[in-house]
Amino acid sequence: MRSLILYVALLATTPAYGASPHVDTGPGAETTFDGLYRVERSVADAAWVAPGFDLSRYQKLLVRSAGVSFKPVDWKGGTTAAIRRGETEFPVTERNRQLVANLLQKELLEELAKSKRYELTDASGDDVLLVTAGLFDVVSNVPPETAGRDRTYLRTIGEATLVIEVRDSATGAILARAVDRRAADTHRMQESNPAFNRAEVQRLMDSWGRTIRHTLDTVVRIGDGGALVKGAP
Image (cartoon, rainbow, N blue to C red; front, side, top):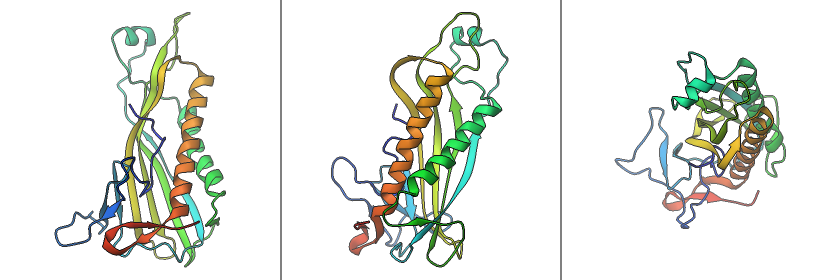
């Protein structure tokens, strides 16, 4: 399974086969409940933009977290027995829930502070974009405990749905939205322990933040023919 964050695009990272992302705003085009048009060939599972999408007048970013929500798990305890039964989804402690939420906000702020096109702000304004990101339906494959001296080896530590929204901060008008569900895949079996699991979450958050920053720095507007136009940051 693919990494939760690696190569997640806000809107328009060009796919490997070279086709440019395109927005169909013609008759019969697919739209969302709030009037956004589907971005075809987006790397994300789904992405949409507003008609007349144009970020050229914005100079600042106001960053907010939509938080993190976890999938309910019917957990009866007994990690070793559960693993032997083939169970793969486990509850997450309150401490680790907060850890994920904190890392999400921290990496967004740190990466977007490196933007070559925008500066961060803590106030709305006519030239300010409101960027909101959240993780939803998070599933953890990490057992909450290890009984005795048993060791647990994992290839995937979990998965989640990433939702990113970009709005005009002054009016609240929605400009873009992207949704992507991915798994945090280590690509090989690794022993599960707190240090490794935290490092894996950190690595994924770092990659996610870089991708969001790059996309915001480069995506400008919808051009002729519906192609999403990129410009120099």
